[in-house]
Length: 121
Image 1 (cartoon, one colour):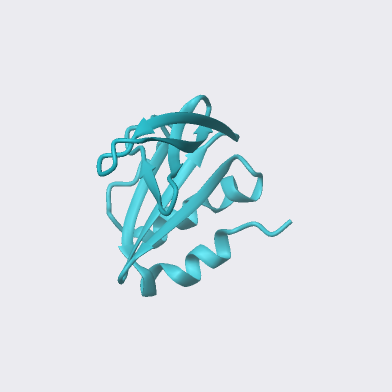
Image 2 (tube, rainbow, N blue to C red; image 1 turned 135 degrees about the vertical axis):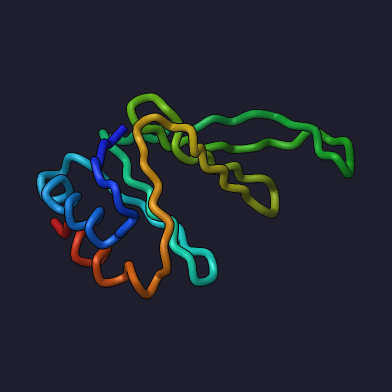
């Protein structure tokens, strides 16, 4: 777990303290937007992707269908799981991963700070 040691909930100060960690490549950041809220996921460590192919029973037809699943792992703990079905896909997010912290805030407040933190190599 990334320990920020911050008593206040000032998101700008939290992200500014994380800036040196982004510059050295020690942590990674992912963001998910929903309406006017942004969910920032800060992950410590390298990620890798594993693919799985399983068969599941379709609830409507009762037929067996192939489901392709990709898992995005950070330090062998799953972060995201993406499952592809015939006509749609689902994404599941694991909030219990011990290597991540989550910050929630308004997009307008965080947009400039996030753009300043993202490393371009």
